[in-house]
Image 1 (cartoon, helix red, strand yellow):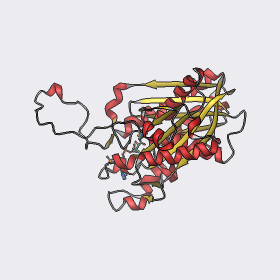
Image 2: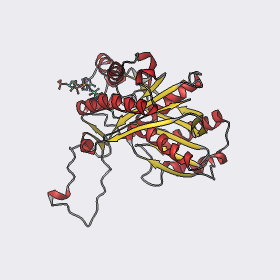
Image 3: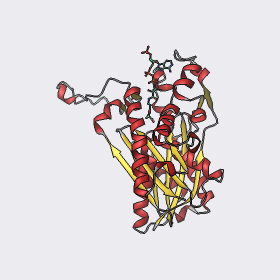
Image 4: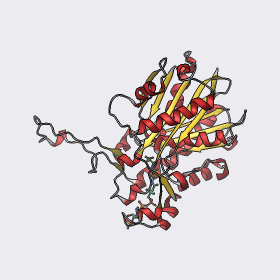
Length: 327
Ligand code: ACO
């Protein structure tokens, strides 16, 4: 028994922010951003993350021809939820009326959609029938707009996918290097607790100084990890599938930097044309990048039966996740 994509959906904000817009708030240029990242514009919204998620989920349900009651598991991925608790998955379950579904969130940063798909595959083996994965991110909520090295990169988006039992094989290659946790993080907002005075240096967290609630990134460190992780994950997953990465028909990579995608393509011996790329229009939307890409391919009719698709993501943790499946 394998996995089958039953439907996909996405929701993108209408509000487009160009590189030129950033030159008004930080010292940067369209030329620098395009040359170093491939990004030309991104979309930003004040819409709550869970409403973005709901819209993508509704589009996926419609695409699959299913009703909310048909869903038995909802997995949400986000690093920019509106709430610490409850999970975004529970909020969506209620708003969709998916009363037969259990629901919880997964935090694996920008690799989370692949982790969720891997988990969905295991639940399918255990008898679940229709699993809704929703990845929604409002990175604008956790972006430091005074930090030019990060603020130009991020955007908002939501993507969703419904999977069920099928004939297509699914394999994955997941990995984690927690020693790199301090090179990419967003700290929780601190509460002023009236009864506690932190004095002991052992009790103070050892991560670099960064604005509470905003993404801090050591770009060069993450870049090195990313190039290596992309190639490793896709190679391992392809080998588990019984083929070489060069035999993949389509790859949907995390959209962090066009140069990272180009390097991975070169290392894997794959033409860039086989990689889905929308970083120029959407920037980096963390875990939403991959399902938004999958939805684009689906709507363009490119997910044809027999087609072998590779997905690969990497991000805070540091984590990476790659998978290969047959449509
Ligand atoms: N405009 C102009 N100059 C800039 C900007 C900017 N927006 N940002 C940085 N610079 C400057 C730096 O200050 C530095 O100047 P200096 O040489 O005088 O010190 C110079 O440009 C070069 O900086 P680098 O950091 O070396 O630039 P680099 O080519 O590495 O590009 C980038 C930076 C785009 C962040 C790159 O390192 C990168 O993509 N890293 C990986 C990001 C990633 O993969 N993230 C994934 C997880 S995050 C997530 O997905 C939510």
